[in-house]
Amino acid sequence: MKKKPAQLLQLARNALEKAGANPVMAEAAAQHLVRAEEHGLPTHGLSRVPFYCSFLRNDRADGAARPKMLSDRAAVCLIDNCDGLPYESAAWAIEEVIQRARRNGIGFAGITNSAHVGVLGIHLLPIAAANMVGVAFTNSPAAIPPWGGKKALFGTDPVAFVFPRKNGDPLVIDLALTTVVRGKIMVAMQKGEKIPEGWALDRDGKPTTDPKEAIEHGSLFPIGGAKGAMLALAFELICTALTGAAIGTEADSFFSEQGNKPRIGHAFLAIDPGALAGVGRYFERIETVVTTMLADEGVRLPGARRFAAEKKLRAEGIEIADELLAKIEALAQG
Image (cartoon, rainbow, N blue to C red; front, side):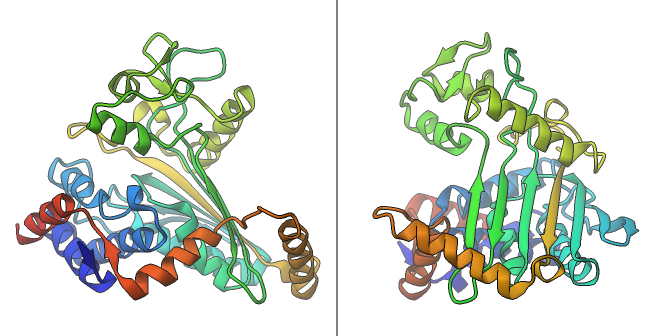
């Protein structure tokens, strides 16, 4: 069934509030989930509403939480998410890095005591709107083993970059460090289907085609083998050692109804081109790269599919599975 974004926003907000989220938390989370739907990313959209409601009801997130500043120095700050759903914290962090980059040329904000933060590339869009380059990192519950190991230690640890353009949509580079997102394995598990070899490892560190084994006991293959595992280590340290957050093995799986508060970390960075080669030169160099890329037939700019989907879905409405819609409507009614 198709619904307008505004209708879905109200439904998601109401469901989250009924589950215990305070109004600011519910609004921020709902806006992000609807934006993910608009970008053609349903695995991180309204399907997360029941997931977040379960998080709140099972005390894996504190619905009364409001973020607070822990550390504030020049270009850098650290925000305590206080175990809530982290969308208010992320929006605050983005505001901080933009303002700090305007003053100092660069801004960095860490977030600690946090949880699942959604689509990193969406969080970065205000940085692009401010004509700055943005970078985002997050860690997550253990999913990737150190190279040569059997037990998962690092999270899928996504990373995202945004590069503004003068007369076009920004470039949005957004990826996790696994060969496939965990959501695809979950879908296969729900459908009772096997997964391709090369997606995941079992509890003994051997390749598996069983999605249930992969999700509940195993781990995921990192992109690029050893190189991906090294990037996972680096991103894990950025998100934990700098913020004091929990590492992957200290956070229970997001997808378990029962478990601890994850208390993972995120990091956001904004860089002002005006403090370096200059805004004009920055835009000229970006367009040189883009023009060269597009001269090669078949090349698609990163983020282009998202913005095309956004224009279409905002105009035509967003298709939501009847079963999911009914579940969210029931949650919204309490």
